[in-house]
Length: 234
Figure 1 (cartoon, rainbow, N blue to C red):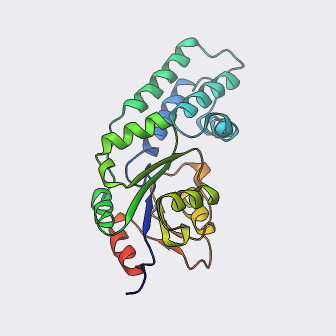
Figure 2 (figure 1 turned 135 degrees about the vertical axis):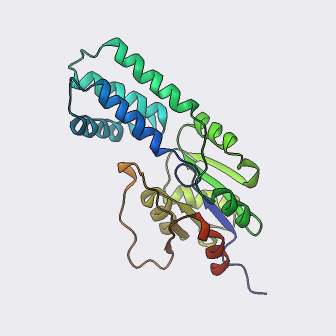
């Protein structure tokens, strides 16, 4: 019998299996309204993005780092005159995000269930540990995965280690996600297949160009085609 080409399938979580970025966008709109007297929305958004980029190394990815970056930006654009009530509103907004119920994206459960029947499936996500565990528990998908990896960053060495630990190496693995930068490019660099499933809302810091000419790059419009793709590759 011919050896199976793919043995391990990785799924991203946020905006691949369930909605996430939309809540950041809504909170950023609230942030802009709170600081409307101090900065125009476009300028404020650019300053916030600068703060997020600057703070990733300290705070990591997720809601807590986002809230801290909003507070830092509010202090900066108001020349340290931001009212305490605004800071309180930003903290409240972050806490609301942490309590928001999970809404699965179309075909998420069916895709994971189908692939789990034939392959090892691993959830690979980055962000705050407690928040990612909360979302996974609420999603109802946790029992479908053979392994859960919550990492601080997604790089080629990280994927190499994960697929060696849970599977037969990156060359026999596939990663599926909505971020070209985090879910596709580094796993292809590690030797695996990278499958891009775009989401209508993607954080600016996750944008990257598709890998031109790569034989292990695939794009699908949604998760419905994933089982067929996995079967086709083998």
